[in-house]
Image (tube, rainbow, N blue to C red; front, side):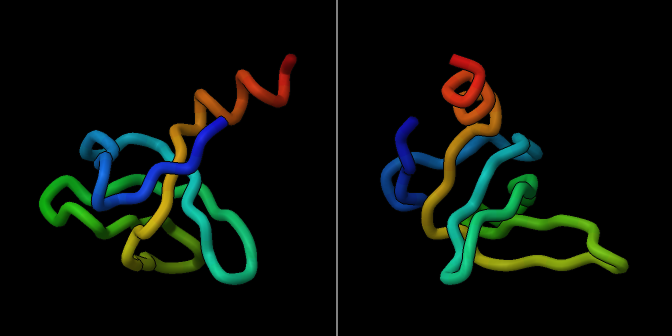
Length: 65
């Protein structure tokens, strides 16, 4: 498992990813029109800037080993 900096590598638009926050990790999708913005639905729509991310598939493979 490897965290990627958004400046070095960008997820695909609408790709499901994990994103690091100051107080934890959350799953979201990357906005298709704005490079560094993720979004999710939690009672209403939320959007935020992505700094470090990881594909969910990579995380799932690592925990299933």
